[in-house]
Image (cartoon, rainbow, N blue to C red; front, top):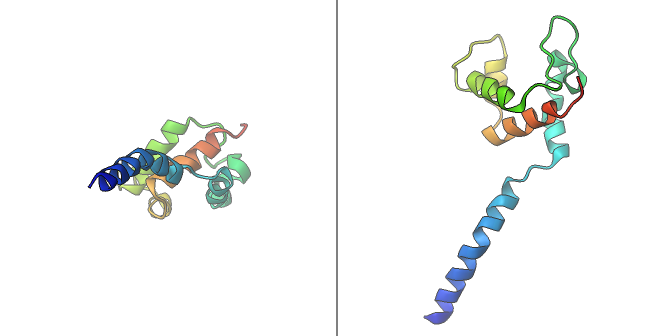
Length: 103
């Protein structure tokens, strides 16, 4: 019985470390996801005139906008469809990637 209690205690202590590790997203993976945005928003988010530039945009603002597209709160021609293809965590990683790019 005591061995079982020790095993549960160790598992409970290790769980937060496992969860935080699972949530860590490789920056190269975030860059790969962001690459799909280049057709409309330019390489690294440096869009041509007439398109929305994503480079240097505020991360939290971008997350909010992408989640609005994903959840149907904001209409668009294609963004509402594209945003649905990403998890909320992937959207946050993509927004973080673009926020870190130079304007």
